[in-house]
Image 1 (tube, rainbow, N blue to C red):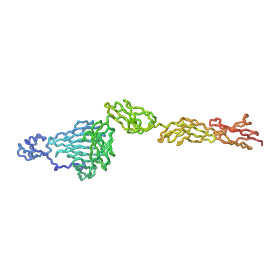
Image 2: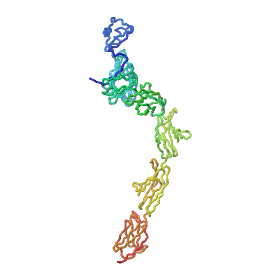
Image 3: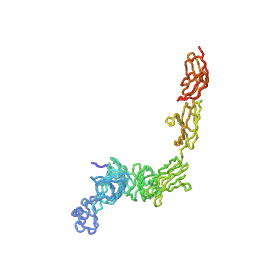
Image 4: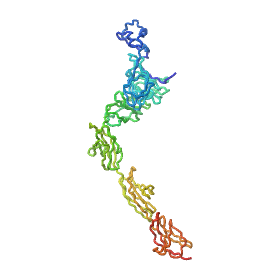
Length: 607
């Protein structure tokens, strides 16, 4: 029955493992002494005599190898020491519940350790091997045993998911061993530095060897992975042939001292690199990893609260198969304190609409006071820089003329140390002023013309006309590039306004609503046609309605009757014979009296 598709074994430099441990005798050794020091049952020394064909039990030749069966040796616990913790790391004893893991804890076997995102745990095994459980991983500890004073230690681990890095001490055979069980493989290690990466679904194992040689066997095939090589093993498939790991990248240009946060690094691109992993540790051996991240580009950024101090950056490239290459380490000094204030307004690339510019920022921890600098150039030349030293405030107002500016802030702590912010640019550009305009009307043409003053920085203008001053439903709405327009209008009362629009779409203030009265045309060209049955009358004009007034005299001292009419023509019943005078009065929508025509005389004769 096949339980695991893949068995991972280190290729040893020594012959095949024996079942007996070899002891090299020292002067004064006796079987009883050996039995007392190394055997579970000291009385089993007689078995050792027979196995090694020793005739005289009282005297053992010096520098003689004595075979001792492993099953007779003392077995003692070999606890694992927790050497460091970063972030959220929890441990659950077998049958227990999870609790936070802390430095100094000892793991005796049966425990499971979970690391959260950007969280790490370091362990030292009884044989001196060092382990680093990486972020978002699940690692369980199995049998942890030492064989008395032999130096042999047996360690069994289970990596269900995530990443594990190890620097394993050279193991002492035949019983000593370091085994890591994964859903895809069993890793048996001897004196090697390696990485294991189990995918989240547990179906893919990536193994990178930094020291030593590893043999990977699966599906009746075996490959040997040497130093600076890696391989990928998938469930149910033979392992891929080993491939060279990507070389250590160049970190030319990475500074030895960084003063800015977020913590940001960039480095040269490298051929065949599909991605990158970067780590920061407090020690050169990267036992205490503090930051870890991956990126598609040759750069990394961490929003971190690391205190100022000495750290180490580690970078390696990732190839198309997801294998991580050789490391390049770079020491650096973080000197970002005091932290600069976090700038608020004006925003980067923003705009101030008033010449009285308000600057705001968030208070910085440890700042005794601040320095605000404003300049027309990013080099902050002293001759053109405005500098304000401010107490523990978080805003300041400065009068500035229209133009482009740069600004920055510094926190100053009690020792006089400065922490400068990044530089932001902004521009001072007030909105266009409200245009002043005039309107003229021509009732005879039914048109109104409008003109207004131009404004600096305006690309075009918005023009609106409505019946009411709230402009909720404007009857006319135009976007114009000129400072004038002509509109055909019906008679009546209107309000109009205009404002400037800049190239970026920002709009200035509307001018105050201007009133406009579009007068009615004077009725003209009156025609009267008298027939046997009616009197037809027509005229020209643009009023909504008219009142026809009849009289016997041209001064209309003796009015006869009036007739209301919408439109510009009507037919009246035949009038009584006689002489008449007619005038037509234009009426507005509200019935208001407008202009009137000249009186027209006509005659009705008898038939």
